[in-house]
Amino acid sequence: MRVIAGQHRGRPLVAPAGLATRPTADRARETLFSMLTSRIGAFGELHVADLFAGSGALGIEALSRGAAHAHFVDQDVAARRAIETNLDTLQLADRASIAGGSALALPPPTRPYDVIFADPPYAPGSGDAVVDAVAKANWLAPGGWMAIETDAKESVAPGPFALAKDRKVGRARLTLLFLAP
Image (cartoon, rainbow, N blue to C red):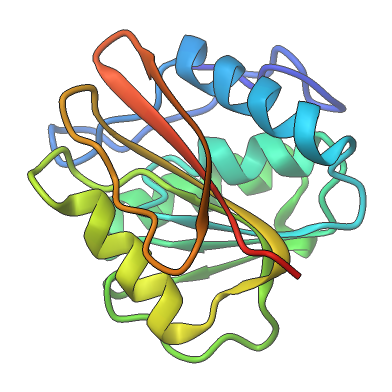
């Protein structure tokens, strides 16, 4: 696993050991960032959140592309350690924060996020649960985007957000949602 583009292009990332984390494949990340970049342009100065962060690859990719800040949420201690290691190695810790706890029980945000990445465990209804949690906590800023990775067979109901794109990539489905300003 590596950073795909930006300041840290090609740099390797560590993932937590074991089967508790399923990192987003490089191909799926490339597709996801292509989908987002065609809609938002540059990531410069955006605030992003990476839910079910695992290794932190999605948030780190956004930081490498110029995001101002990334907030990582994962309840697994090994995942949070891997994120810390990756941030320290790439010298990005000053532009990031890490929180434990469930991404399905989000506290009110300090400020809403411009882009939210969510890669929940592949399970029926997991994408819908993320949509509900983000909407309930008001984590997505007006004009913001949310990208959810689920199993390819699992569609995501957009809830209060607009469905911008839904695409299968290998065994994953990438759902891109938008909150109108």
